Amino acid sequence: MSQRTVHLYVFEGFADWEAAHAIAAINQPAFQQPTDDRQPWRVMAVGVAGDMVRSMGGLAVVPDTHLDNVLPDHSAMLILPGGPGWEDPEHHAEAEALARRFADAGTPVAAICGATAGLARAGLLDDRLHTSNALAYLKGTGYAGTDRYDDSAAVTDRGVITAGGMAPVDFAREILALLGIYTPEVLAAWHDLYKTGESRHWMRMAEAAGTAD
Image (cartoon, rainbow, N blue to C red; front, side):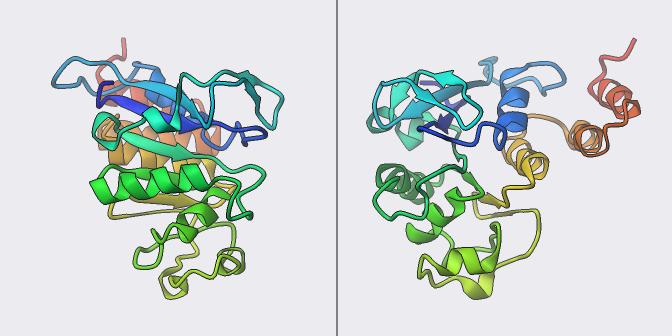
């Protein structure tokens, strides 16, 4: 696998909208910076098994590969969306273990909503700035990082991105920034476009990317 590949963890009931802005931007070359090796960015769905799962919105998704096949050295990032089961220490144990391997290898991990509890249980938030749906939510994991909690929409610290479930656009911004998908100018316009819904920011993106007519 190319290191331009981002892996998205999918499971029964995963919150499809929470990573949607990020994966659409990763998989769509428009406005992206050129890559040195000319390898395109792509997103691969990864599951515990190869069986089809349905997202919270009812979309049928067949994983491209299994968790056991994903190696940090062959990935650009692991994205963990929210959904059912993150409060259960056993339900997503394999994904949490993979996130730990990614972080130990220096490969970025991004978690939103309930998935932040998985990172807390994996010990990844004990000494990193982070956020979630609420501090009280993470306290339920028994983690040791309460003094590092930041009540922001999304936070990046040492290769780990966290976000609350109501902040998918800010979550995507942190992902795109860490991966270097867009230039800072394009990313700022992209963020303003999807936060405000004002179409004038689309032209800002085009101008910043050098694609405006």
